[in-house]
Image (cartoon, rainbow, N blue to C red; front, top):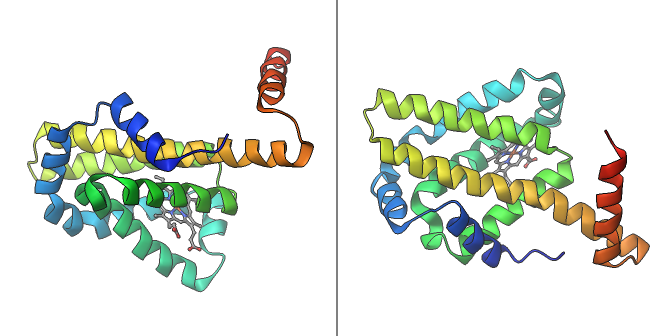
Amino acid sequence: MNLEPHTFLSTLKQRANFTDEDKALLKSHADWGALIASDMCDAFYAYLERDEEMQKILHQSEERMHRLHKTFTEWFAEMFTGMDEWGNEYANRRWKIGLVHVRIGIGPQHVVPAMATVVQKVGQRLKNDDKPEELKEALGRICMIDLAFIEQAYVEVSSSAVLRETGWTEGLFKRLIATGANTIS
Ligand code: HEM
């Protein structure tokens, strides 16, 4: 269960139908993306602040919010530039972001609605700034690809930890999960 970020990104691009047209459209709006990134960041953290549990995590240290403002803004802008044409560098960065969230203990239940907030906020902004519907769709696809990285990091990290600790095979582990799922109603 060792995820290879580059292969994973290729699979996701195909699955989400993230096309060359999407890439061109995003790149042609890279300046706009960079311009609104800070506002999107503020809206995102205002949303997280409303949740008591998330608020505690965000304010664990004074520097954390500073770092987050910088890293989130960069993350947002990178969706438009694709870093290296949405290649290996992009995949490695997304994988690392996933791992950071697993380490901090932020579960999928928080990440999924958080990404929905990004999609909703950027959707409002696209409308206000009279941007094309195709850009909204391209952004939706790349947001879902990025979300899949964060979600998959949970599965990979927890599965690898169990396999390492127990010495079980991957097959046995999968069977146990399937059996466990049958017993939970
Ligand atoms: C749409 C989903 C999310 C995105 C795109 C996102 C983006 C990022 C990025 C780019 C980083 C920097 C990673 C690094 O250091 O390499 C980060 C770290 C972090 N994120 Fe998120 N995040 C998301 C969801 C959340 C949620 C739901 C929380 C809940 C509080 C959260 C809290 C944090 C924290 C505490 C850090 C580490 C900050 C530090 O101490 O440096 N994130 N996030």
